[in-house]
Length: 374
Ligand code: NDP
Image (tube, rainbow, N blue to C red; front, side, top):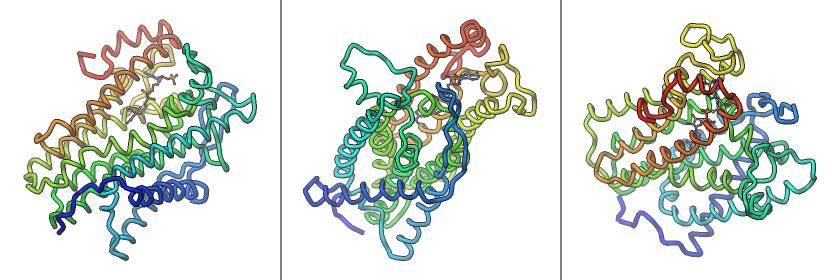
């Protein structure tokens, strides 16, 4: 057990250590994406009619990360606690990496006037160069055969997972125990990411992949916002040594699994429908509006039930900390704000794309995220 401070101050030494950690981790993920086996899949049709090939390596990288951590821990006695101790230095370095990555994308995107761009690029009253930096200037940048937009989910999601997984190491180092709620927190993140990687191809159907350029907004979101904000509740768990009762953590597990099921199943239903219009949903042929909008399964209940389920999952992350502090709840709150904003943007897009069909759909599935309210 140690009485050392949990967080080290930012110094030249800690910045240097953090730089090695961040650059080493991203390089390992990138080389891994190039060399490990993955599922070969085609992307959705692009505005120019092309369907890009993708190699989906997320599950392999997720699995190899577990192997590496297990070997490091049990084979060499290496702890992940330094990730917690170097948090501020890691945060500073990752911001610099996000800026450098954006600049690299920006110059890469200018290599030819024929580079494919998003059709949804906004024209704001700000200089084009600023828009290109912020939103990006290429739809599908690829380096060394790796699709950079899909790749970035790996340092993002495996990055947040490593931060989350470092909290029990820090708790054990400081108190000699790991509480059930800490196991829940890490376990919930495991199920959330495992179910993500089981159907990684789902990401190919998302708006970000199909329709958005890749610039600072998404790069910073992937590299900084997700890992450093989404691991937030862990800070309230490290020094909380009073264990949750079996009833409390069991209820929490049930809540998490139900929300996770709603979130994943809603997404998978839509994805199945888009790939095969006859694929059964809850054992029945899909019901649609105009043969284009799914109203079977969760999509007949609400227009964004997938968002509802995911917000529930994030509430379960925060609930692992109990009710001692409101701060862990900033995580589900931030997701609620982000997804509400996104639902509004998507609603506008669908109204323009589907016209009267969308109106009919809104009458059928009356609310978006919060049943009977919004
Ligand atoms: P959706 O998966 O809800 O996709 C919206 C699109 O699906 C619409 O633009 C439309 O596109 C199509 N669509 C909508 N309703 C129907 C319907 N009834 N039938 C058929 N097609 C329909 O949204 P996102 O892409 O925004 O999100 C994907 C997932 O990612 C969500 O589960 C969300 O929770 C999650 N997410 C998580 C974030 C995080 O930080 N944790 C951030 C952002 C998203 P089309 O033109 O194809 O018809």
